[in-house]
Length: 184
Image (cartoon, rainbow, N blue to C red):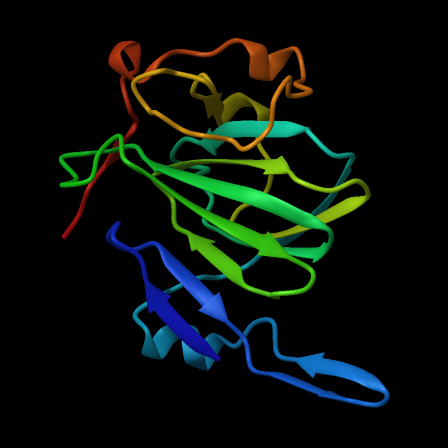
């Protein structure tokens, strides 16, 4: 397992070693030891799965303290453009985003610690997206940013995205008071 830092502090791409032969493939999708050696402390308590058609945008979501969630995300089937936005006050990369294509084929994962808003756009039909979370879902603590805030400058890679009613509203970054603080 290779854990690769991104240009945004504390955000990592995870590239598993995939072993394949005539029967199929095998890979380790999580290793506490590998994560800890890379400085990632995560105690996962909930796994989630979503299924989407092509052109769906989900996000940008987060959970505020004390129910903040770190997420290890990957695609089992299909493809997404995955987006993480740094919303930690005082961070040198506050308001910046990182995007990566995750797919059932490339098997890459993204570690998104608490303090990031997260979303994705599905690039294929029948996409299955998996999340490992460090805290349970708490509707009272959920928050979002407007997915198409022009100040974020995110190219979602889809035209005419399919959105939930909740994702069509949300504050823009300029009007947002983040509940997260960057810690070096």
